[in-house]
Length: 224
Image (cartoon, rainbow, N blue to C red; front, side):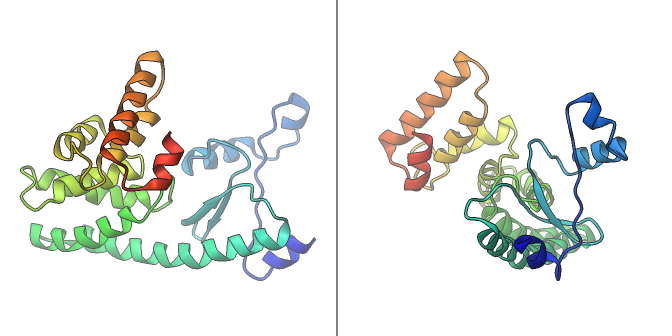
């Protein structure tokens, strides 16, 4: 009740159910619509809590939080304030990039996009839009003369939207982790673990960065 009262002023609540038993499934009014929304918003686990505008624009994603209703309301308020601001910023950046008539205008939009992407975490609702601009920068700076190719690849690694060539490029261009990019390769390798060989490769990369020294001590703790 405390939580219900706390969200009443700012939100319209929508609950989508995904039961497993046949009896419970029969009570779901529109399971096809639920499945469609699950795919649209990339929901892979439950509970998933999403904050969005009335137009369906996602600006916050979270899940279970300890601490009870008051702490959860505070958590949602933080997501709302930060997420709405980031949503408007990402829309402006994407709009400027899409409207760009030449490379000079695209590069002008690339700067704010990469800055926003570097501050996002994996799973952020804004990452994919900024990742498209980062991929453009990666390709447009083929010789890394601007430093944009390396920076774009590293930003893609940081949010988990990299491809193999991005990982290889970052590893080759920051072999001693001087810029802190090689440790992002370690994160990517951990995310690729599927069998014994990929697990050994991930561990070897973490050990390599251990020897060189992590820039992010919290990340070092998590990976180790």
